[in-house]
Amino acid sequence: MTPELLTDLETRQSASRSWFPPHLKIRPLLCDAVAQPQSTDEVAVLVAWAEAQGKSLRAMGGGSGTGELASVDIALDTSHLTELSWSEEDLTVTVGAGKTVGALEDQLARHGYTTGHVLGSANLATVGGCIATDAHGLFTGRYGSFRESVLSQNTVGGIIVEATLKMHPQPEARAWAVFDFGDFDDACDALRLIHRSDARPSLARITAPQRVLLAFEGDEVVQTGHFQMAYAVCQQLGGIPASPDDGERWLEGRQRSDFWSANAQSDTFADFMRQKAPWSSVSETCQRLRNVLEGRVASLDIEVAHPTPHGATLELAFTLHGDEQRYRELRELILPSRKA
Ligand SMILES: Cc1cc2nc3c(=O)[nH]c(=O)nc-3n(C[C@H](O)[C@H](O)[C@H](O)COP(=O)(O)OP(=O)(O)OC[C@H]3O[C@@H](n4cnc5c(N)ncnc54)[C@H](O)[C@@H]3O)c2cc1C
View 1 (tube, rainbow, N blue to C red):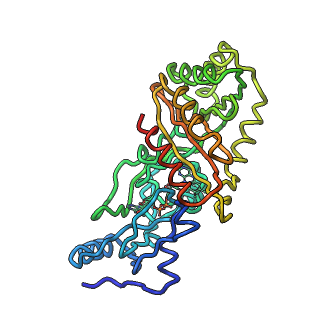
View 2 (view 1 turned 180 degrees about the vertical axis):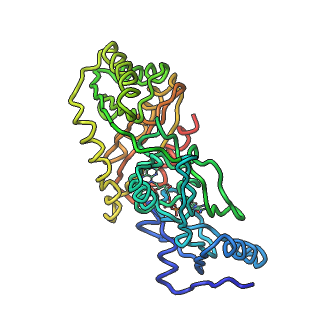
View 3 (view 1 turned 135 degrees about the vertical axis):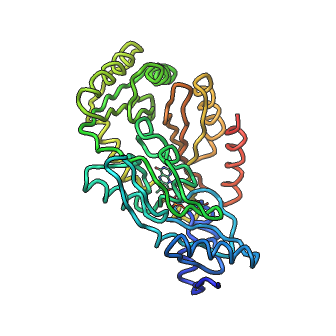
């Protein structure tokens, strides 16, 4: 059976979106045709047909992915795969791969539930895209990364069609602790020791210059012991408490961020990368990245995020002025050190 394929330019452009900076501003990707399957069976027909015809096929979610993509013959637009059902008894939600995280969260919130994934791209990013890229929301301490919340998934020829995710009752309360440290290594030690203990903040990160942000979610009783343990660690290491309101303000600012809009300027690239490091080399890795990037970029922000008892992730957001070649050279400088 031949699947229905759309070949008008507008649909092809819309199904070829990508936020990889050179794709965004210089050379948009363009597929030859777009399929918009409505069910798992239609995905299966399309996958079999593409294989028989020797056509390359790629799933297209919200197009908010920031990684470089090769061009393909056919884009499989998942936007019609949005069915949703949930079980309050099992605390699970089964959702079509094309549902955006924002729409999923809105629907669950009306019934007092959440998956816990708070993404800057919630209104674009789809469940399938978030699984494929293992998206990380801000509250990974409590909810894990996107893949960590997948209990099962239905995949056809590499295309995620549907997934069953962990669902949580919405937390009753969120409390922030904010501490300023005089020294980056002390701030790292605070996060390391907090995660070595039983205290488990929902969100923990070091923002510039040496500010530790901690958010605790849950019911009042659970929250109190964890909160006090982490608070004591920060004080013992010389952290100066700042207003807890700064935490909520940071979260609001983070969700409103227009960082990517710098890509609208013809000579500016804005990009974001992650690099994991064990605690024994977080500080050294951060310094190495600063040495590589400072002087080459127009702006640089490095945050320590997603801590575990073993290490953390350095999140780099930078802008640079120049052409695509300069941008790619800079990526090359960062990428080898990412493997360290
Ligand atoms: C403003 C902005 C903010 C962002 N904030 C965050 C953030 O807070 N955290 C974070 O982790 N990322 C963030 N990102 C990156 C991006 O949103 C994530 O990578 C997201 O998971 C991509 O989802 P998508 O549906 O847009 O995927 P797409 O961009 O459509 O696709 C990305 C990749 O996933 C594959 N894919 C998509 N759907 C499927 C499927 N059904 N089956 C198999 N493969 C599939 C595609 O083929 C492609 O390789 C942000 C991006 C932007 C532009």
